[in-house]
Image (cartoon, rainbow, N blue to C red):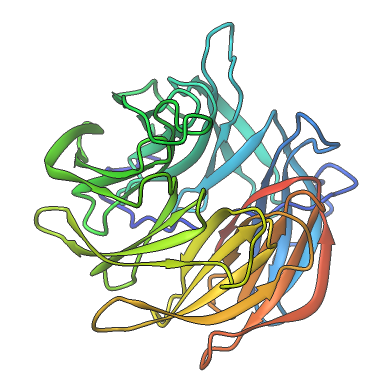
Length: 392
């Protein structure tokens, strides 16, 4: 089947892992209409993980049911699912691939009945330590941030779902004030604007969110006028999310556990600083290492995870101003919540506790934004990312 460049709207949803005893088999039942498949990316280098795991997610009950190992792979940390539901892409977060100083990007086909993944191909990521992957809004390109090398690359998605070699590439340069963490550039997140005209990159080493004009036909990045926004020196921007209406951008900084709110001008891609606010309690004095950020589909609430404090911070969003108001924190029931995801219905939040090897499911109160544990905790080795494939 031929996939045109402008046929699909990106549905990029985060990743989930769980320890599954057996490889996926044909005996698995087809999903009910209210169920979706959840894939979990993991770290395999220092754990018993075998790669990418799959689960059946019941959106009515908020329950995960293990399907097994979807695909064996080395450090398939972050994942992205094609909006047609037929392909999944993963970064292999390594520093050496096929003898080169680079990581890899893997393409898989999805078996919708069993959840099994079949490797289509792998290509070099063009840099060491690829830590994030997303698809542009037409699903014509996979976009990758290479943390260790401090660069970004784009990879054309071919008609059969496989990846071509990189068509776009930019090497960042510079450093930040913390020489132990910011000795050079460290691209940590990449994604396109709602209209697909710009690509935004959070660079932890530079304390910048860099905005590039994005050529959706060739997958090429071009520096744009006034194409960057600064956060507080030494903050270390990690991940970025847009408000559902596209008017505001929220940047989570890892090193000081803060959220910076920006207004967004869609014609120029310019970001204007509105507010910087801590994602931690005022009396907290421990390790600061924020990880993930997401806006609820309603646009009313923002969530951010804190490693060290091992919590999810909850904020109310002012619909007109885009500014944030703290609503409190909920402990994630484990250690080191590297990632979390809001399910497609907006009713549940799944928190991945990397160092305690678990995923904890919370119910989201649509009126208050509060989180309540559902009672389900699933064992999973070193979970890094969860992403959903919606039912057909």
